[in-house]
Image (cartoon, rainbow, N blue to C red):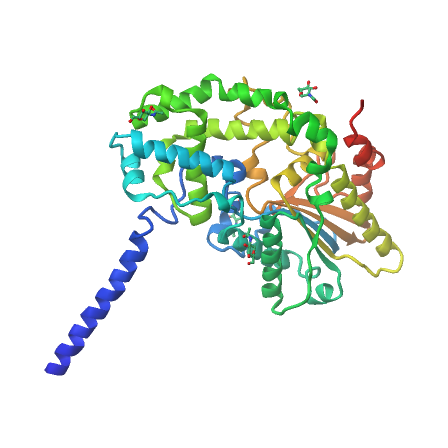
Length: 457
Ligand SMILES: *[C@@H]1O[C@H](CO)[C@@H](O)[C@H](O)[C@H]1NC(C)=O
Ligand SMILES: *[C@@H]1O[C@H](CO)[C@@H](O)[C@H](O)[C@H]1NC(C)=O
Ligand SMILES: *[C@@H]1O[C@H](CO)[C@@H](O)[C@H](O)[C@H]1NC(C)=O
Ligand SMILES: *[C@@H]1O[C@H](CO)[C@@H](O)[C@H](O)[C@H]1NC(C)=O
């Protein structure tokens, strides 16, 4: 009897400790829904999750979906893979963290409406981003790369082998930015995990390749450091669509129109996006936007990519000539080796960089080119545009170039984010390598980094 009572008391006490611990750990941080996707998540652009592009990964981060990939028509062997990959999920830049803090402080001080979202922000959300987080890779970003490496082993089991790693036929190249270096290290961890053993594999840092945009003098002068190069973005932000987003947010918060600026709506949109990307949380920041608002925010970001990284200025794509030649030089070498003795020196090359590394290269290849330029005045008619950075460069975005040895010769396949692409101007989704080289003949013969990036006086 006494023994039973003691047991019961002990059980109840134990149960309370556990519940209290569970309660504290969920409530001390937040009580926002986890694993619920914000309705506006597909408009986050380059701040979007990779899982939004390939939703089948939500259930299984190691899944590979063959219905999205076109293989060569005949029986072929994979002989080479070059993967150019964006770093994984990261913290905001210091500049954006400051914008976020400023808007949060302002709401805490000045907003008094009891709109659902706002009262939750005020009572349950704390500003936890600090300046020194400045663009660093987060845990989710490490996981992005670890999982991608494991999926690439599944996609290319004959290339990503222990033997190839051990014999130096797998190379890792990275931008010097900490988020890229740490992504590369996470990628290597995923590789070792997938192969089931530790093999030595040192990444090489190469900014001339992975951050070519910093080194192209003409790009820096004419676009990067030139305000008027992004005039259309400025106009859009001053235009009627953005004004409506700001006024709707002011109405929701019951604040005067003059108190909500473009910086305010950007800060709130970033907060919604980052809380989701980093912690998988659907926070009340997301309730400050409806779908129409989010589309405007997405367009403002895509417009900037258009003018700064893709078709807006010719030098944007041309600045990637060095990476383009690096790729084709390697592919040529593989083809030469296959055609001579068959011993390959490079089976897989992984290059880790930035959204800014991928976008100009994709543009140089004429991919994601809309018929009509994106401008400050054509938001409405560009709703169906193909230049959507959320589809192209989410975190851990990857361009995969695969060579196949087939009975009829060498073929080349291209995948973006694990989905096959047909190169513009070619009809075959897995064309003969020679046809690819003809298609890009003008670039292969020109597109010289030095000439292109030199400033003509
Ligand atoms: C693969 O992708 C297709 C197209 O997005 C989708 O319909 C299908 O459900 C996916 N397959 C799996 C197994 O998730
Ligand atoms: C990268 O990883 C190292 C070692 O884990 C760590 O010291 C460093 O702070 C990390 N950098 C970033 C940006 O996360
Ligand atoms: C800045 O950009 C504008 C618009 O593209 C261009 O006309 C101008 O020449 C550029 N200025 C410099 C210094 O390159
Ligand atoms: C916030 O409120 C303070 C007074 O409480 C006022 O001085 C300030 O101008 C307000 N800020 C904005 C941006 O409206």
